[in-house]
Length: 390
Length: 232
Ligand SMILES: Nc1ncnc2c1ncn2[C@@H]1O[C@H](COP(=O)(O)OP(=O)(O)OP(=O)(O)O)[C@@H](O)[C@H]1O
Ligand SMILES: [Mg+2]
Image 1 (cartoon, protein in one colour):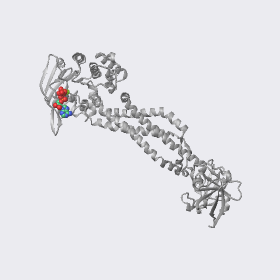
Image 2 (cartoon, rainbow over the protein chains, first blue to last red):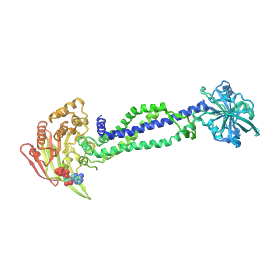
Image 3 (cartoon, each protein chain N blue to C red):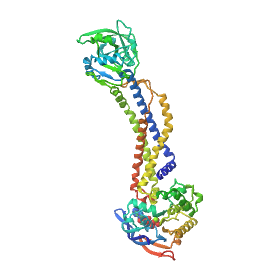
């Protein structure tokens, strides 16, 4: 096509300026894909951890259970439906009983959650083997976050108080048997993992549970009355939201970078239309319509985007690949976010991310290439030939 | 049959609230195969008249018929079509596309006309042969002398075999030898292809070649001079 060739030649002629624009656009593209890839990787990593260690194939919740409202915990327990119990016996599900408790680490009263789980279960990967072989004291497993917050160490004893079904307070001495490292905050913060049978015994709630987590191998979910099913997607939605919210500051960076690219191309377009008025007049005298001239200049601008994508593919591919292998180390501070993270995150580039970013860059380049060409529509050919602007 | 028919043409420019009359009631006709020009002092309206004929500028009054098209009512797109198909332009400053080679500059009007490749090549080479630039086909305008540039511009103007060529001071930037070369070439084209040439000039060298001189002063035709047996 006539316009494409002429646009290409003109860009070649512009030399350094063209490459400057292309460099800014490529940088923007590579930065967005790389950085956004980190968030995708972070989300993937966190949700994998969350699925492995907490969510598994989904959970049946006791109808009163609301993790956002601690007050509901009082009534969130019940007998497990028989058919669900069958699933548990087949080792395709595991019940968890959650009770409110009070602990006294270093003599200060603090609320905590007792979570009873079968140490022999295989549905979620928590180091429960530590909960076994204990006699007198209640064996307690906690996460690193909890250990740090309450200043607890392996071997520490602590008083655990709870109320049974009748509302009577009772207490037992617990012993921290293990501190597990986990990125899943919901199984860490404020949670004391204890053997299920001990908790049922303590609270006089035989055969009861708050949550029944099912195996990822189960593909068909029956519904049980009083036990609504929560699927994986629902259970990790908070994580998704948090990563989204966290990426806002990154998005501001993208906007600034895109804006710079926009400005560079916009400026180039304005300048080249200003400088080449006489050429515009000549093209019109040779029989081009204004629309043809406008598309010629627009194509020229859009070409910056095309070149940028080519450059990004050539330079960005090895660069981003290397990044995905090396990952990015996370400073410990990041752990103070709403969710805990692995020490190192590895970016993941989805097709949607790459093509979406490419499309975004192209759309923006097209708009800023086209906008300045409106000047051409106002240009009188006779004035243009004289080299004057309307 | 007249190629250009101008009746009562007035062109006014706005000038600080008032209007400046650049062309004042012009009546003119040009037939096929004429080799003629507008002559007159600077500011007399030569370029303006040429631009109106070339449908680059809209007249304020009167009727201007170029190749059976009423220029005053032509849409922007139709005007482009008229120029594209039937009119060749030659400018004082050559106005070649700097990024194109000689060949590509001459080829450009044919690309706009969507002429098939083989046909195009033949026409471009023919035109370049005419102006004697076969050895500069691959050069860029920046590598050519002024005279060579203007020859490329002539080739570009005539490559599509237009009925009408409008040349605004085509020799103003050339020395006399190059001017004569260009003019001889145009005369030859005019004879062989019966292309109508209209010049705007105050160059004596050009005037010597004109077979008809339309004298303009302050936007008015003061004299329409036919020389020799050239014009019909
Ligand atoms: N866009 C414009 N606005 C106002 N006045 C104009 C405009 N274009 C031309 N004129 C005026 O119209 C008159 C005729 O101009 P034109 O360019 O046709 O002269 P010319 O005969 O070609 O002169 P020259 O020999 O110097 O090229 C001049 O007085 C000029 O100042
Ligand atoms: Mg002039």
